[in-house]
Image 1: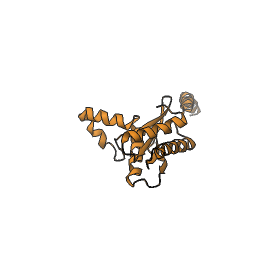
Image 2: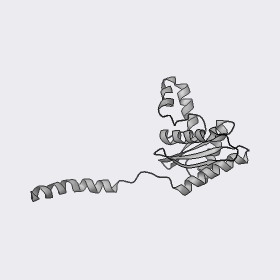
Image 3: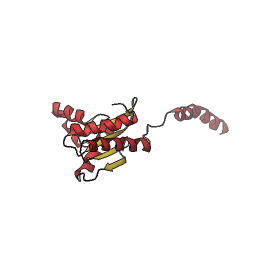
Image 4: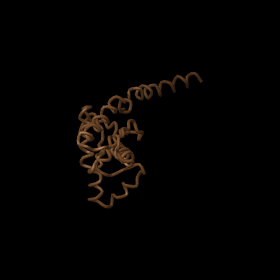
Length: 161
């Protein structure tokens, strides 16, 4: 009996050591999320646009949500959906919309999750190759303006564009 226990311990010990050496999943610190959202909100405000900005982590949780004074009620859902989509798909929402439009057989991507918003204004947040979150901006007159404000958020924290 003791011999079997020693043998089992010897066999599983290398697996335990290997599991402990694995890096933890990438995360996005709250202070950086706040800085990125604030910079994006201010970039749009400087252009006269009242928007909402959301940061959604890789697991789909909203980490930060900022809503400008006088922004429309739809801006929150738009910003969260764009951020969620970028975090989930690892790509910008404008590019995803173009991809679907150019290949209608992929239109089902729109229905993968009810939280997805596939319109310009959502960008993945990466540090190096690590996808850690998504930023979404909603409420400017065009998706290109929303995306430009999101880029300002990425720039202030040094995330890859």
